[in-house]
Length: 221
Image (tube, rainbow, N blue to C red):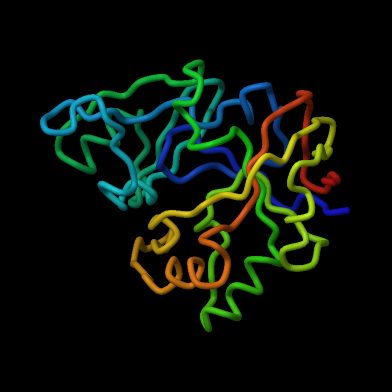
């Protein structure tokens, strides 16, 4: 049985998230997670997502919900709404849309991502460098397992606090893991190593079979 060490939600897709002590897991994932996204408004990418792959600097802007409203903090500490942050970052505003109720839009594969910290630590040893677990942008970081023990959950239903999740697949990573979440500096070897030794995967994707509340210190498994 694992325990929840950290809970993260990302109100704006591709921005840094907020660390929580507890959160409700709804049928659509963590309440408030990835409710907003940037959509390109200029050619040749009109209508497509604007994300970390287009501008890694997005991850240095922290989005959080304050009293139900979205607040974004820039690297210099300036707070604004999400449009103001994007103007600061790019000098222009793309279209910001609420994608919460658009099935399959706000999440890459499934609404809840769990990462085992022991697997990240083992990967750090393989990489020969400290690997910040936040590179993997999970919702729940868990401890108390052996490295890759979470793979045994595949195809099973597990409890996460009061919620029940079905573990449906491993999370196939992209170039985002190469970016340091604090500096955005890149370490290309990290994704290469995941490809070579871990089928390009880190973390487990889950769908929600029963909503409920999860808190730091709660059990998962």
